[in-house]
Length: 276
Ligand code: ARG
Image 1 (tube, rainbow, N blue to C red):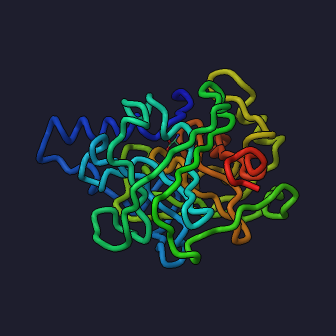
Image 2: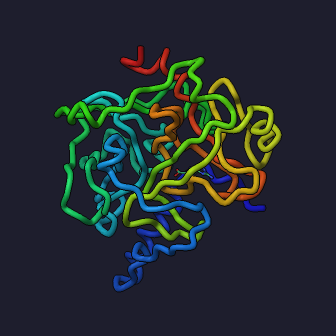
């Protein structure tokens, strides 16, 4: 068992480092069809609220600087994971990042479609606990409004979308195999919302992580095989057409008995800026 992986960016840093060391290498091109996370190609025309977070300064040009996912919850408001914006992930404080952008309306990262919107302000939950990952949420404010049709509603507490057994879909440009095979094109994977009892059992504390039902939800398949992975963090988990989670952490990816853990949106609506 490897240690719980809390963060996408370690892998992405490795990717950038590898690219820098071997300029001819193109690690981002490898996208296998038989992927561990059990996903399939997805398209922003069907899920216009999925966005990529980009900084070419930090993460290089190869995949348009993508390092995390995000989701549009108001024309000028994008949610992502707090851990995507911390110093450990970025190598600098988010305030020092000159070229933080939100890429929307684009399936293929290197493509030219859609738009790249500069981020006007970044708010990270001050209550985020980097040890447990509780409260893993940040809000980005865009200078210019995205179309209203790009906005996905957030599921409030008590919404049936949170019921265990509900089918949900997670989206991202992250690792498709667990071997740093970062997707060049948007993908999605079908998972089920799992009961808190099972999530607690999977992550009782200690090395594999601590599940906190008041701040998190977990989703996956009992036999593994479908999951988010590194690079997907901050991206949306959607059920019944509403946002229920943000990709946050997990023990490896798609492993039996180690579901993906997500920031529980209903828990954050009350305290996120402009949330209610
Ligand atoms: N922390 C990772 C990221 O920053 C996400 C890991 C999600 N892992 C999982 N097994 N669902 O991209």
